[in-house]
Image 1 (cartoon, helix red, strand yellow):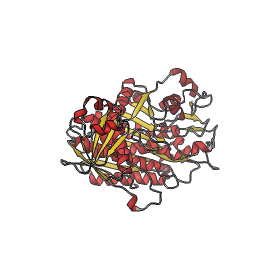
Image 2 (cartoon, helix red, strand yellow):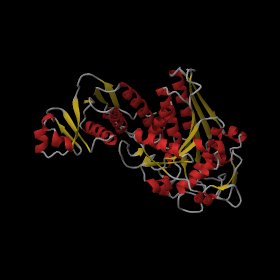
Image 3 (cartoon, rainbow, N blue to C red):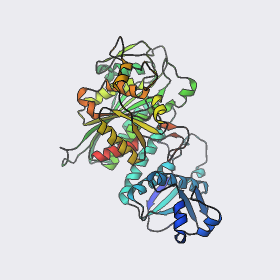
Image 4 (tube, one colour):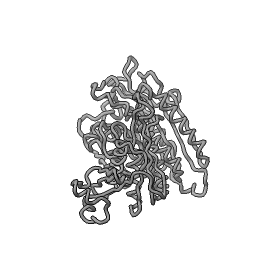
Length: 482
């Protein structure tokens, strides 16, 4: 993993360095006597918009839009940027009186907002600025959890940002295996394993959909199966067993249905689902959650060449359903179909897949929101609530029996793309639903993260590029089950 994170959070009982004070416009109006330098702020017309640094007193005022959790996260993010611009390496923040939920979002703002990916820039070591935030009156549990989760998010950002000439299928599968075994050595109170399945295994399992996508690649396909199970047997009878499945297209040209050049330049991010699954898996281990977790990563790329699969091909999936290929750029759903089949053999309570699946989801919900789909309305809503609590944006999209007709095929069981340009995110989700067995229909969720996984501008606590979306939402959902 590249060294891209230079923010340290420490619990402290003494103020060290610059003092950070969060302030709202309302507080400026109502609590004049309690605000240091109020006269100066008033004289200069500061309205709690943006940041204001009083150098003589070493105080950084950070404007809050309001007192909701996201505002705290955004404010902490802005504070880090100001500290970096001012070359300040030591700061302190007193969290006395701030609610636990708000504390959590503040820490996310520091740790996620301070992320930078510049591993391939030529720069001197002294240009790296290590910033330490000393926290007074911090909730220790929240600090511990936030550091673990944000470390996983930033780890995922690193992988997704890594260019495809480096992060090929071999790189990603070996990374998943190696870091899982590192965690296995560190966390002895759980059974932790990493099994990497290769092409030969997938041929034995008749994963015709997955293998078709890999046909033109210079690198083999891999199905990574990572597992975590606490050794404590006290709650083993009631322990939830979960599978999380991720689309890991390390690069997507579109195959023979070649993407236009402008749509291809960010396709290193098409591995975002599998990377999010890996990040959530590692965070689960470090948090020692009382669940059994299986992480399935479908890893390959979608290349062009004389061996490439074609529009008009008919593929046979692991579930023995036939698929008519009408567009080779709808490849992620083919990989997921066989990975979801594999996951259903694990006898789990819930299956959740994460994928940068459709541009249609971005059209429907915008760049910043994940689409949540499935047959179980209560389960969908529970995941959305977990996502929002974690700091991610998510919204449900409804399956529609009329849309299902659009993926019918005249020569196979199902078509890999819809016959209409409308409702593409939903028809992609319903395609996946064709490979979910009846006993798992109420236990499965599909999360389309195509919008927020990679955005080429800063937003909230996320930098330009990879966001690590999916990790926080997934971990929060898993915490609710443990």
